[in-house]
Image (tube, rainbow, N blue to C red; front, side):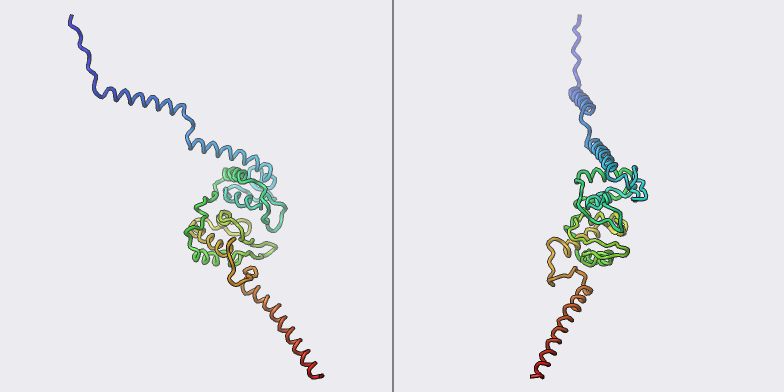
Length: 269
């Protein structure tokens, strides 16, 4: 019997076998591998929303409604976005201590992690402005001169041209911007808290907001100095004129009285 010759393998057969093995290994890895980064982020967001809902039920629902629909004691929160929550709660204005013409800034009672959870829950009720990133609020590379022009045009009527704040009608006021973080300034422009109008990106682009933040930091920051000495609240000619009227005119009257008294004594002698 003639012996059957062995069948010769194709040179690429080993390569095909190797690719099949790698594909099988990859399929097994995909089946048993941990969740992807996107899935992990989604899970973390869901957990944040759940925790935020619990915090909301305790500290916010009594005024804003159990589902953020609002009530006679508080406005609806659907669509205000995470930025509004981060500003209001991050500056201590919320939860409100008592009703009034305006809710003032006070000590913050929530940690930043809890504020983020509250913001995540409120953001889930309806789309709205998100919390800005560090790059969005950084004044680095901003045009301070342009920021000053924008501030004087849009903000100085209430906040004073150096951000010192000022009185409004019916017991309301524009707060001082001294010591306010760039993030909260940006969020205030985005959301328009209380008496302030909102300036979304469609009205005031992100670059202009950064310019305004840079201007505020230049004229009312922690390292700002007044070359004119006592700045009298930055109120300009109003306070300066009042100072001159009271003290300057008072000094002139005192000098006139002194001169008159000395003249009368001189005549008697």
